[in-house]
Image 1 (cartoon, rainbow, N blue to C red):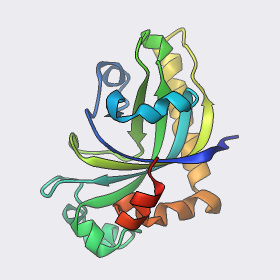
Image 2: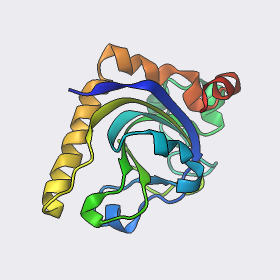
Image 3: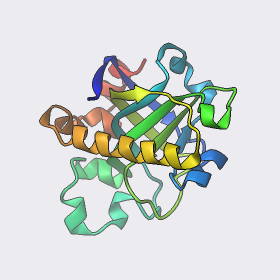
Amino acid sequence: MPQSTSPEHRKILPVATRMNANTSQLGIPTANIPVDSALWMADVDSGVYFGYAGIQFPSGHSSHPLSIPADVAEQSVVPESKRREGWAVFPMVMSIGYNPFYKNKVRSAEVHVLHPFKEDFYGSQMALDIFGFIRPEYDYVSKESLIKDIQEDCRVAERSLAREKWSERRKDGWLWGEEEKVAASTV
């Protein structure tokens, strides 16, 4: 059963790269957070977290809210004015740690947004609301066992985010760049 993080973690960060060599081998794309812009990671336990990611797509991007069908856009929790600015909100899982299976020496933060994207979104701004802890970081004996656990992490996140306690949080304007909330919430 996932646990709430305490205190809640909210960050606005640039997306450095969409996939690194490790996640491309797994077929699980991640938005990678530059370590130098994520100094807060030093105070966070290694492991897998879940929450929501607000992404501001550049105009012309295939996932820009103005590029998606109107019936899908109507289901969005993001106000129309912010959708025009490129903001969209998605559920996510996030790994924070050293990825022991790959023997990484540097701690990293990798966000897997639970949405099939047609193209990368390098350089986009991403607002993260991290509020649930799924499990600690593990080492694995095989790539297949790692993939199996990541897939289970995604299912746990989706089930958790379907609960009212957390599903309502996708409506938080902080996730689409409401400045007054951003200034008060960033750590």
